[in-house]
Image (tube, rainbow, N blue to C red):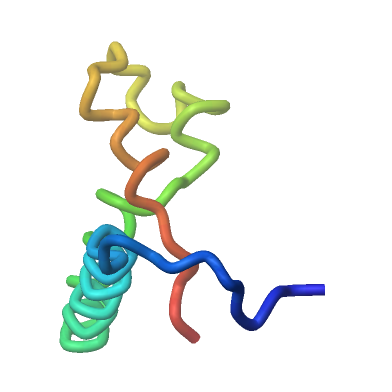
Length: 80
């Protein structure tokens, strides 16, 4: 069961939670404004494509850099 409220007063507003929600909304709005080709390029850059890590030969077999692991932090489900 999820609590609806509690008796402990909060000291600070949930700024980080609001920031995460706002960031997700802005990225979603940006995604729906892209053309199909731009969306595919955007998703390839920031979405997690497992084949890039498990089948590196298919993607050029380039040495992994720190930027190649950015999708582990920026991935979001694709809007349908």
